Length: 391
Image (tube, rainbow, N blue to C red):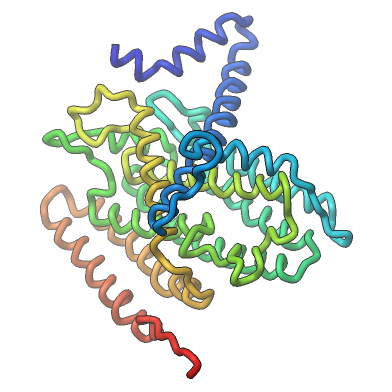
């Protein structure tokens, strides 16, 4: 019974394609999986937007959406109808083709990342041996889409917003990649399915997730920081901050094109959360051996939604950084810590299975954090904000 529930979607796909000729079945199976991804994650996007608006409302002591439908649950539908019917304005001097293609490229690239993410046991669209490399190669195209949007608008606010966004995304993409390299070093594979399988082991009922090791915990923190900046989420949302540059690189976008940018941002959050869960949190594996009877896809999406809840929590809690603080933090703290973590992961791999590696690896990371985080950042005069008022 439990095995059937775990593989219900795989069995359903095989049953549906079995009605077709044998030569058509592989292509039909791929198209069916692609259609499922295209329908599933926009639905999750709508749910996440509603939960975010409700959650931020509670954090700020207000109700949030509560007019459209019972408890406001139909608000995403109303927003979607509004976006579809709103007039699409394009500046007269804009490059119309590039202006149109920018949000399309962004959404297509973000959706392609799901092709290699294992969402459950035997539930991956394309099980590539270099799946992680494919994910980052495709994800790098988002910078191109952002710059296309800013440049094609023929608006100085949009162009400056795009340049700042690209600088930020490239700066944090380097530690994002390097934090993942530590996982590749330990696993010995670029296949995301093999990375999950390597963590799907238990000792005394507890999982061998990489986050429960010193290098894995530090790598996960660096990955989470870089992923937050990569998706332009608070407190790293300067490229689209209204108080900074009107609305950043999509100042001249309205209607459905703006909705595509909005969709791309949230689906990108879901995608990067899925990658982080796969690399450090065991992917679809359960947190306890006694819970292995729960379908694997439930664990994957539970971790996904938990990550989104943390994104929402951070947005309602942390203030926005300045541009200089953001770049200093990337190059003077996150990147050096990530490079050091590669060295620590190598030590962990070759020091054996004794307790010595726990002490040595933990000590190196803690000392480095104190030196760079406390001493190094102190020289940048980061501290409590002081507000002065005119008398």
